[in-house]
Length: 245
Ligand SMILES: [Zn+2]
Image (tube, rainbow, N blue to C red; front, side, top):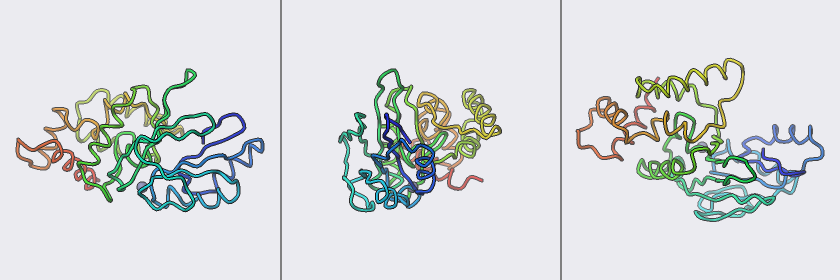
């Protein structure tokens, strides 16, 4: 939940309950807007109840089925909510019409990215509807955002992602350091999120599939030919993660 004065914005309310609880604790706060990244129920399940109770306006991806009514958004659109200008980025891959919301730096605050199930700390979303090529391009677009962007991933999957990342890049010192930090946070019951984009570029194998270390590890694991292209390497990396226990 983002607050601006007496108003709040929520992103991907899979369940209305926690939002109602937060609003009950802050009776001065009104829910003004709901932003949705993709159609999965764990991102949309609370939309109808929240809209009905609060009258909040809903925005969502133009090419997906979101509980009506909502304002459809496509790449390049800007959503002006409470004086905040969120930029819409198409990020197909996890679902076919998935979008992300980027809020540029303002007033000394670092940029914010709400990327749904596209980018996780240390990982990326499963490819349910899109191709590896689409997901690689989507992650490239997110990786090109400013390094101080705070990445608001939709799920706390960090530690399990980092176990896989270490299997891919056992010699990555930044990854070892980041893993220790995240383990300490989780041991204290703290979230690892939001993540910093610059850190993700150094530790997330799905943003590093063109790095020589990652490419070599994937080629060896999947027995790819030496001339396998970047999309084939990315696809094999994603498959390796799917099978990883
Ligand atoms: Zn999803």
